[in-house]
Length: 198
Image (cartoon, rainbow, N blue to C red):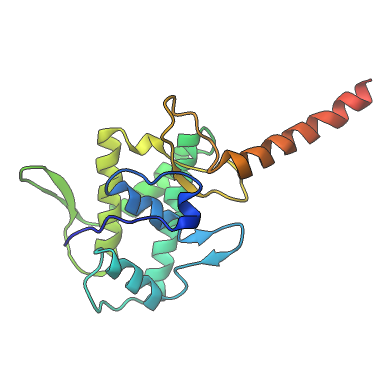
């Protein structure tokens, strides 16, 4: 099964550049929900199947059910929680434990070849699709790119972005929106304390 390189939508590209290679697929998967607006792209098992099929993660005409949709969203949000630690916030140990529990339910095998990689044991169904995303995360952890995949520090946003800054200090999906908003909130919290102290 082949992976398509995913080009982010124009509205997404304005926030940050895409992640390198197959890691962009994981970033795009994480952004299938806009937490601020409540827009959920994976709104039904059929929509989920279509989304995964279009990206080469699931065979054509695969049928998924509501349990598969629930498992996918649990996996997505657990990945998001894990990535909070990459931006310097969140409880990485608890999120990693949850991700380990999910990964334990997905049989994987090592594919030996010119470039060894992890592959799902079974090529069909939701476990295989999630296993392919998990394998990309594993590979990016090995090559160092995983640490640059982060979620916005704004708790109302949590948009996944790839931090291409030289010092890896990015904390917001976009400084112009979330960064300024968070700095403004911090300023307003400090201001009354200074006023009452004077």
